Length: 226
Image (cartoon, rainbow, N blue to C red; front, side):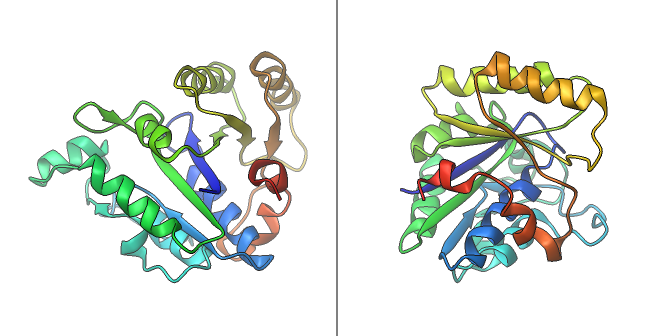
């Protein structure tokens, strides 16, 4: 399976923007790209400006024939960890359903972009985490990280967690990367690259209409092999 698994150092660090930018950039160059996210929570929250819910954003950015519901098989209203949101809804997230749905999405596509939920160790169900799903799919991991104070520790822990499960870390994307970065942001980027032995890219602030342009600045060829 060709593609990437976009993981985050935590919640609200820009995973969805990174994943959608990758989808849009691949689609813009003529690839048939499918998107997948195991679960979406927080659907009862107010929209974030022009940004739709994650599964709708990914469906719009991808070029495969997918509905938003196809992108995310589990969808919950409360902004909670997916295992707890499922529990409150009287549901159970089934690992086999997730892997089957992800592989079905990838079938016939040139690439699959899978976005995780929160960080790698977020539980999706009993004894099955976001990291376990990444292992099942066998995709290289791209880590979305914030730019400011605290990101060194969070990012290096995520790199370590991925590698502990024998996952390949393709790169780190710090976002939103400012046009004129502050010294601390430059230092954070260089430190993560050096200590994590990983390529670190920056994704500039973008909008839903400019995702393809933003995604084209990322090292997609290195991540996806062409």
